[in-house]
Image (cartoon, rainbow, N blue to C red; front, side):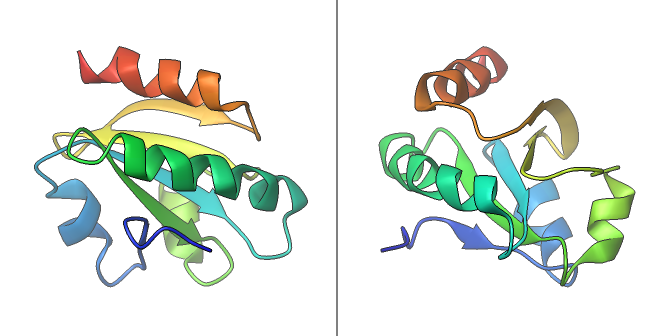
Length: 110
């Protein structure tokens, strides 16, 4: 079951939801047909609950939001971009273990 704290973001609400967020936002650029994207979904569900208030997690379907994928130079998925204060703070690629997501997020919260 998907975590209700994970936001599904589109081109229409990306600026308001991600760029204007008062907390950092980890954006998962994914697609429904992507096997590794499906593997990492449960990890993101856990992190959304555990890190609520510190970071938001949002998902962007690259098939439905191609201009966002092009704007942020997403060439393979899953790709993760951490936005802080409306700017790209860091990037990460691939279906990684939970500990690597935690380290990635924590180092960007300081």
